[in-house]
Each structure stands twice: as C-alpha cells, then as structure tokens.
Image (cartoon, rainbow, N blue to C red; front, top):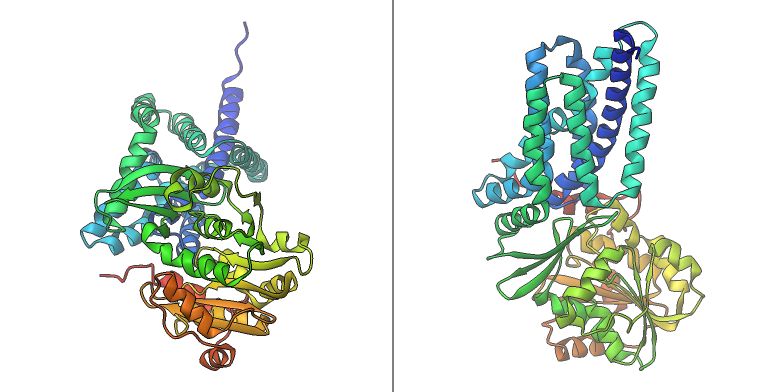
Amino acid sequence: MISAPPEAAEGGRSIALLALCGAALMLTQYLAVREIGAAFASTELVLFASTLVVLLGPSLAYALADRLPSWALLVWGALSMGAHLLLPLGLRALVGIATASGLEAYALWLTFALGGLLLSGFFAVFLPRIAREPGRLSTLYAIELLGALAGLGLLALLPHRLLILAHWGIGLSVIHLGLRRRALSVSLALLALPLAIFFPDLEARSSELYFWGYHGLENPIVVESAHSPFQRIDVVDSEGERLLFLDGLLFFADEDEAFNEMMAGVPGRLLPPGSRTLVVGSGSFGCASRLHRRGHQVQILELDAEVARLGLAHFAHVHGLGSDEIPIEYGDLRRHVERLRAGSLDLIVLDLPAPHHLRTALLHTPALYARLLTRLSEHGLVAISLSDTLDGTVGGAVAASALEAFPEALAIEDQGLGIGYLYGGRSLPFGAAALEREARAGGVAPSPALGDRALRERVRGRAPLSASNLIAVLQMAREQIPEPL
C-alpha cells in the first residue's frame, strides 16, 4: 500500500479544517444571536448588537492571526470551545444569577465584549494562517465558503437540539484538526458528552434560574420549551400561574385575561352572533375561544406553528378548546391579507407581540391597516392593542398609524394593565359609551372611552410607525436594556 505524500496529507487536513471552520462560523452566527437574544429579552437593539459582535469576531481573528504564539492559540481554542459548550446552557443561568445580584448590566456588556472573541473569532483565525502563499487566499476562502453553505444546509434540515449537537461536533473537529493536541481534544469531548446526554434537563434548570433571576418569578418550573424557526418559546409555571414567553419576553400570563377580554370579549359581545372573525396570533387562544363561545365564525392565522401547539397543549384552562374546534392557518399576515376577499370579515383581532422588533412594528403601519380595512364589511372593525398607553411613545405611534388608515376609531385604556386598545373601521357598530359599559361588564377597570373626534385630538401631532420611523420601536427596545452601574 502506498501512503500519500506528507504534503498531500497536510493539504487535505487544511481543506477539511477550513470547510469545518466555514460551517462553524455559519452555525455560530445563527445560534449565538438567538441565545443572546433569548437571554437578554430579544429586542431590535439586542439583536443588532449581538449580530454585530458575532460578525466582528472574524475581523478580530484576522488581525491577530499572525501574532499569536502556539500556546495563546491553544488557550483561545480551549476557552472558545468551552464558551460554545456552555452557551445554550449556561448563559441564561448566568444572566438570571447576575440580575438577581444586581449585576445584569455587567453580564450584558461582558457578553458583548467577549462574544466576538470567544464565539466566532477562533473559527476565523485559521484562514489567514494557512493562506500565506500568494494566490492561495481566494481558493482557500472559497473552501471556507463551501463549508458555510454546508452549515446553512444543516440550519435548514436539523431541529434545534440536533443543530446544537452538530455545532459542538464541528467545533471539536476544528479543535482537533487545527490545534493537534490530542489531550485537549479528548478533554473537551469528555466535557461535551455529559452535556449532550443531559441537555434537556440542564437546559430546563438553566431556564428556571433565568426566570427566577431575570423575571423575578417565584419557584419557576419550565413546563415545556421549544425552538421554532422564528423564536424560542417557553411555558413556565410560577406560584399557580402559567406564563408564555417568546424569546425571553413575557407574552401572556393568566392574570392577563383582561387583555383577551378587551381584544375579543368586548367586541365579540357588541357584534351579532355569527360574525366572521379572524384572530391573528394564537398565544393562549384566549381571544379565539371568547369569540367561539359567542357563536362567531372564527379563523386563526398564526405565523409560528410551535406557538399554536404549545398554546393548545398548555393553556386549556384559558381556552377550553379541542384541537380541531377552530381552524388554524399558518402564514404571515402581510401575505395572507392579499388572499382575503374584500368585505369578507366583520372583526379582525390583532393578537400580536409588542413591537420590539422591526418585523412586528411593520404589522402596525398605516399601509397594512389600510389593506385590512378593505377586507372589512361595512360595519366591520379591527381590534388593536397599543402595547402602551395613548400618551406613550409606542402607544401614540400605533394609534397614529390606525387613525391614518381608519375613517372611524374608538380607544379605551385598561387602568389595571396600563394598556390602551383601539378599534378602527369605516363605520363602527358601537360607540364610546357601549365600549366603556362592556369593558366594565367584563371585569376591566377602564378609563373613559374616547370617541373618534376626542381620540384624534389626543393623538394629534404623533408620527405613525413606518419603515422610516422606528423611534418608538427603538425606545421600547431601549427600555429592556439595563443602565450601566
């Protein structure tokens, strides 16, 4: 048997190493941004900062590549792999403990300061170290890009947990091929093995520390967590209350039944039975079930199938629905509205997350509201949560968007939750007095309802949300970031 020449074997090792580095970089960009976002309550600012940190890592590696002695590269590799092993398990626990100790700001800025160095930087250091001969850089960079495409394929094919395990395996392979220290490779593999075996339990315990420290929940128990293509979803029990979190932000709690009442219960009682309704967003299914019980024709549109699955499974005490009582269609509202017939709906309930992100803010623009208006019957209406008061930065902007699109609108605020609600259409089937009366009948403590003229005067001068006006979104995102100590 003839063995390959040493230089051929070395060339094959370099090609494999760079392809693995490309795959690792692609997976890191996806996983690190998601994990950091879910740990620090994902908002537009947090996602932007974490993405920037991860993308700056390779630039840092290129600057250091030719200056590092072998021992420094070994230390960097060991620390980097340790960070990747602990990221999906330890970051949430760290944030929870730090917040409970009053050190949340330190945890946030430390994560951003070290993120590029420990997460993406190490995987980018090998390309400039290998491509030292003239003319090789373009070829070797192409190999790294092919590895990144393979990583993109894994993102499309693997569920979240297997994706993390694949990422760990690729990272360990980079350590083995790039550093050539068998003892280090074996040590890190032995560390990864129990983490992989006990991953679900370790992730749940880490999340419970996070919800205890970051959100201040008493004795939190993670009922179920899921990772969809869109977000992380957590169902958590705490002191007899069940809560739903999306990317670390509270979306629904049992005490938020007043929200379902104002969004669906009140308009549902003021509309004749059999009204055609579309509920955008499933959540706890509380809005849809209220309308269903009143005898309305209900259709749900949900972007994320995992949210619907967990809502049906774990919030039956809220909705009391069977799995097939209300039809659910999956898709994006901006596309779905184009398939609806003009005048085909009497009520549209926008049960949406608060506009912490551009993608949710764009569901509250005058242009989209105007498209929804064309799908309403003559006396149909859209129910909108302002996610804020009318005088707040976000609430005022959402209300301004609605008033630009709807010829007639009413608004009312829940003094308990501190949230405003707006109902818009061409010619509303009820007035401010009926709205306030039904809110009180539903157990809500409302402020005086505002008719169309009073509402427009209240919001006068406020700018609506749009792709070019995201001040309100950035302000809401800024409120989630702790002040430096």
